[in-house]
Length: 375
Ligand code: FUB
Image: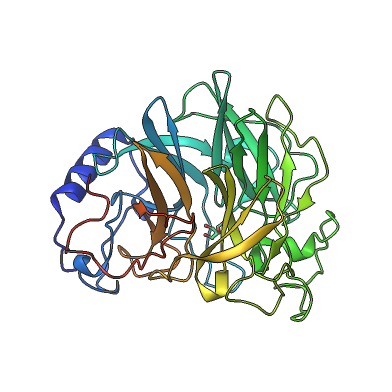
């Protein structure tokens, strides 16, 4: 297999990551593939780590340092299908860096599915939060009945190891939790995903194993909405029955199920900019990252446009964080492997227009031939 030429940043990252991690399983190691799309210079940014496969990066800044909570992709035996059965992740590894563009440390296993009493498989996209000296890891996994639930685990260290609560969060379902803490200290969890994420099988909050495989199947009706719930003061439970997050068009009408270019699919994220709430998400089968703006963490939100054009690979999933006075988009593609199930996380700068709209990013065009995450 031909060796891909490594940029100095990537090489430093690889060496450090290798030094920092315990023995990785051979089947989980990155093998650079000749199937991947093209030369490194075809991509706007380069993978943050090349020693393990990572996706769904949820980034946070704690004590000036950047921590990324990704999915840890592995090469399992299950054939690819429309419901994501091929995403067979079993544990989480956390990334940290002192600065964007600097060396990245890959932490040891922070949580393993075998240490979560209620979970069976598919440790999908996580997020994390911090409160009063404790770090909280929120994660979806399938329970023994095959229903996705959302669990929470705690640690005194942002890199783990985390200890899971014995049961999933009461009233939780579906996937992709994202935790947002507002200026008043109140935290909210956004979650949900259609198709393999099972939101359509939980319309009234109860899992219907025989429900639709994809969505509501009603193109001219409002699309399935992501969910939001306030967290209790101890960060371990919902205070309320999750509510629908309404995403409206420019005329104030809900986006419709048939509007695949704009409707919610998965990958919720919330951030606040200039006093406004920005709810962003993936459109899934049309492969965009989109966003909508509102005046309250509950919405409603008005669709504003795209953050990211399609990446190489079927899915991307992102987070947006401010660091050092600039804003950063973390996302993933399949540059290293050329395979949807084996992704790698990246970062690039996110820029706003004077009116607060976000400048759309093209992930496949390198600007001036330089890694966009260079400081
Ligand atoms: O990584 C598994 C799933 O794929 C995530 O939960 C989704 O957001 C998509 O990235």
